[in-house]
Amino acid sequence: MYKDEIQALVRGFFEEAVDGANLDAFDRYCSEDYVWHGGADPGAIGDLHGLDRFKAACATIFEAFPDMECKVLDMVVGEDRAAVRFSAAGTHRATFVGVAPTNKRITWTGIGIYRVAEGKIVEEWFVDDSRAIFEQMGAIPVMRETSVS
Image (cartoon, rainbow, N blue to C red; front, side, top):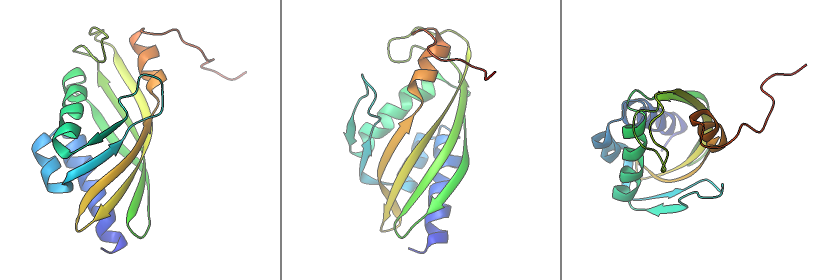
């Protein structure tokens, strides 16, 4: 695939599948044997193998944050990969990773690296600011200053 095709594929995945919370769209953008390499933070779910497992994990996020918006902030495209820096926000309306709904608007950022083969996304390396999510939900104490003097 050409770089502009990779960019369009990954951007479409973000806009239609992730930002649109459309699990059916995942099938158009991701291979059946999709591999998701999760964050390294303590308690992370680690690697997921298979599109169905990845979709199930995403469904928990879509349920917990039903109005979630996810925007691509930057994208760098290489030979068979795209690196994406994104922002996300949503209202915490259902239990998420054991934390009861708070009805708070939660915002976070993250980075994903997507490998493409044969016209589909086949692998992802992902990290987000999980600490910020749990701090905003009140599940863990705020550990950093929010302003600079």
